[in-house]
Image (cartoon, rainbow, N blue to C red; front, side):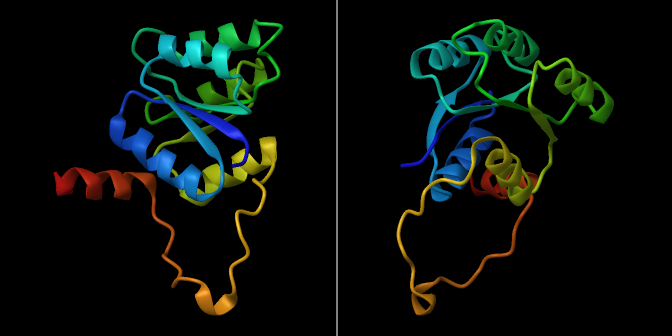
Length: 155
């Protein structure tokens, strides 16, 4: 398995969708549903990257960033903040203050998130060689909100 990524989001559909996306891309994925359990996982597992929502229960995403970046042992871990509420100017401020290494606004395209992850920690090692004839038919890229809407409609 490739680099270890921690996803921190209180929405189980988003967590599950991102876990599937990143696992399929070759990354090892850890999950947390709130800021406190997310920070505990960061301290214990020392992931290669954190993808965290800003609006989290029990510890706000910005407070989580401050704790991670304020720790000599953890500050090297890159953080991508996600939000559907805060907009571009606020997010750029957090990156400028070095509380986060990048940000992405919801809804986002899967490819955009993967590109940000690859820029920060690189591509995972190849899982296996796939012969051209064995490749599945490509699926068009979908926005995360479309996947969430689809998943909620299935319940």
